[in-house]
Structures are given as C-alpha cells and as structure tokens.
Amino acid sequence: MEKIRLGLIGCGGRMNAHMNSFEKMEDVEVVAVADPREERRLAAAQRFGCTRIYKDHKELYANESKETLDAVVIAVEPTAHDYMEEAAIDKDLPFLVEKPMAMDLDQAREIARRVKEKGLITCVGFQDRYIKLMEMVKEEVDKAPKGGLVYGAWVGGIPGVWWWQKKSTCGGQLVEQNIHLLDGLRWLYGEPLSVYATASKGMVKAGENGVSPEYDTDDHSTAVIRFANNVTATLVSGCYSRSVRPNCGLVITLPDMVLDYRLRNNLIIRTAKETRDIPREKDDHTYYLDAAFVHAVKTGDASRIRSPYEDALKSLELGFAANESMESGQVIYFK
Image (tube, rainbow, N blue to C red):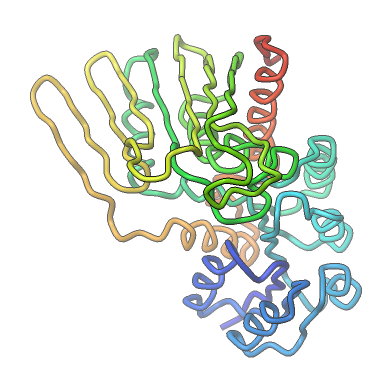
C-alpha cells in the first residue's frame, strides 16, 4: 500500500490527537518531526520510528521537500505561525493546520490567497464539523423552515496553556476556543450579515487562584450574530467558572422543533409529539478530519474536507470582527 509521508510541526498538545489518528492509519507514515522542545520531538520520533528529527520548522523545511514529504501537519501556539504555512506553499506541500491559524489577519488572508492561487490542498482543525451529532443538527436545520433564534455557550475555566492568559496571544476565548461553535454557526447558516459583541473583565483576578499575573483577557463575552433568513444567534463565552459549569453547546429554536446540542456529548430533539435524547456515538471527530485530509492528499479529491483554509479564514475573521465590536462598541457589518 502506498503511504502518505507526513511531517509534523509541533509535537505537543493538540498534535497528540492527530498522532493518535495517524497511528491507526495503514496508509500514513510519519517520516519527519519538528519541535523546539527536545523531549517532545524525541517522543514523537520514537512513537513513529522516524529518524528525521528537527529543532524547528525552519530546519525541517531546509531539509525536506516535495520529494521527501507528501504533506505537513502544523499544531503550534497561535502566535507561533512564523512562515510555517508560507514555506509549505513555497514547496507545494499540502498542509493541515490547527485553529486559530494566526493572530494576524493580513497574514492569514495572504496565505489563503496563495493557497487558492496554487490550488493547494489544505485543512483546518475545525473537527466539530465531523461530529455525527452536528451532522444531524445540520440535516434538521437544512430541511426546516428558515428563521429562528440560536443560543450558544462555551463556559468553563482557564485552560492550562500560557497563551490563554493574554488576549494578544490567544485572541480571547471566542477566537481561541469558542471559535468551534462560531465556525459551527457558519456551517449551519452560511455567512453572517453582522455581529455586535460585548465583553467584561474583573471577575478573574490576575495573580490569584493560579492565574498568571499577566492575565488580561476577557472573563466573558457575548456576541449577537445576524444571518440571512431571519436567523439571530447569541454566542456567549466565559472562562471564569471554576467548578459548576452550565450546559455548553447550541440550542436552536425552529418553528416546530428545538434542537438542544450538548457540546460533544448528546443531542436532545424536542417536538410537540416527542422528545428524543441521542447520545454521542464513540466517534473520533479528529480522526475523521485527519482521514479526510489524508484521503485528499492521496487522491487529489478534497470533497471530504469540510474546513479548507479559505473557508476557515472566514470563521477567524468573524471572531476578530466580534473582538473589534467589543472594543469599539459598534456593530460590524459584512459585505
């Protein structure tokens, strides 16, 4: 069996989920790894038995090419995108990159432009599009009469990664974490017409309860997003909850049905006649995303990829537009 040769850039955190996928794929071979932390790159190399081990992405790209790799997978901190995707484009290498793809929209837009110009296969880590419960939600929304209200929430604590402590290094919770539901709204309803957002600080105290002294991001925010066909979504984000957490996910009120999607867990469908509670199957949404990318690289057919770079950029732009609204107090309109 012909194997797809992958290079991994960033061998910790989120990359572990991708490595779990690649271990299960008989048509994939990880042949090169790069990470500034020695213990992480060595552990990844040992995991796959590869001998091409690099200190960073620059060293990897200096030694690898289209002749030695078929694609690269990039999973790094939001602020670490230092010519990683651009170098892949230069070398005609398809790439899968984790969200958020950049903290600089101009950089992301230029990457999207060059990807489109070259016709390069890309995929972004919006894995929730591959959850079967979300597929069911989309099926119901697509066949239902248009219009209605949507309430979405992702409320919890502060993840234990350094970039979460400052808005300048994570984009805030809406851009770094709740972008999954933001992207889900776009997947369900198309492109937004406008967004208005507010944010609040002061509940989480910098330097207390294990919080970094540099903490300056929003404790919570609320974004009101208007879509076509009389759809209005209110999406809240909160990182101040340390113990009891509310239900997170999406509640969609249709004319004759309520879809209560509990984030990555179950879907409750209520009508006048019945209530159905559908648990999530043991599906691995990251595996499905990775498999779609590998299939595209292997065959040239990218139809299974639900979040190519150009589309994912629109979710990133929506997140930053919400941030702009938080700062200006103005409604942001989209063309």
